[in-house]
Length: 433
Ligand code: NAD
Image (cartoon, rainbow, N blue to C red; front, side):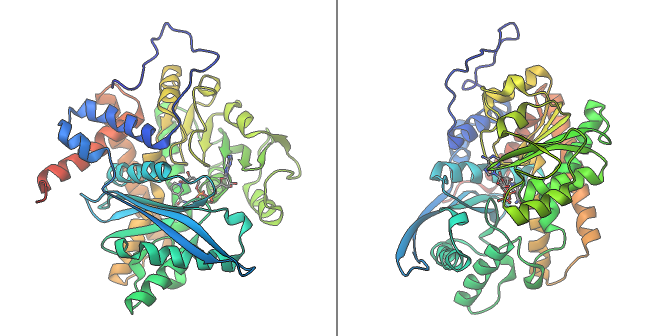
């Protein structure tokens, strides 16, 4: 545990935060080191597990609509495959870096192990600004990216899925590019596909649904009623907007939502369906009638029962952790809380449902999609949701129990469970050659 300084309970939390290392890859390694220390892992095994197995960087020459060529940079990182094929999303964002993709790949390994599905961890990313590209530019870039990473992806090797600013259409293009190259339709090469080409019922809602299930279990721990609880959600995309809809179906009150342009607030509650329609028309939630404007920073520190970061990394840092008022933080996003902020929240008694658990519903239903594709036998939405419910509640209780045993917070509980599972698989397989 050497890398994270634990603030002694007598020490005041500094008003001006010391400089925090916000590099996601180093953060992911600090989180791993904490678990490795709890598990007393052998130093050699630590070296294997704290770095990715394979890193691929590719150039993606793309013809833009004006006839000019633009060369994008993309990555695919496979962190670990000890328990099954690599699995993880593809992100399109101007701020993508190799270190971010490495961190996201490692988090995927722990996530699939936390919910105990037979996958490893991977992630991909392309440095681009999809909001400034036409659909045909995105299609050409995606198909060339798919062709460049083709040697290392496949239904038995590595299975991409959507992430920030990619969606089912992106997956359809990757599936088609892969299939045309192989000479036969390969449904299982990606998940999060449209239903018409082997996508699963319930996949689009799965990340948010899993998050809401985890929050229901956390509410029992905190003796809080979800009905009537106030919820603030940062990020109104796939994870955040659908979580808002599902929270409001559970009669919780969604009082604040935001996107990259800012946030909106109404203490009496915001109708998520109206917000979705408004965002679809205007491109943002900002300006939605019946709401007042707030900043993303204000949203994080506002008075609410449940806070759901559902945007990008490093939302909750030493700069704002001591001002977080929520009783439960459910990490729909990957990596929204830094290790130092984690310690501050733990001291305050905030229950943080870590990303590897809170957003694992997405990869769980991706696993169901892959199973259905391989069997060419498809399930109803009710079947998918019932199986997701079982996986999420079981995982929550295993994580909670592990945390309790080690007198640690839920992230450490999840990591001890997940890293332990991956370490066991690695040891029993032995080292090749
Ligand atoms: P998305 O592209 O559908 O939505 C992202 C949302 O975040 C958008 O509303 C965008 O405006 C907003 N956003 C971007 N920058 C922001 C900022 N600085 N402040 C506030 N909002 C900002 O992406 P998504 O799939 O919903 O992913 C969101 C998070 O959830 C990511 O961390 C992703 O890795 C994680 N996640 C997604 C899935 C999934 O199945 N989609 C699964 C697991 C985890």
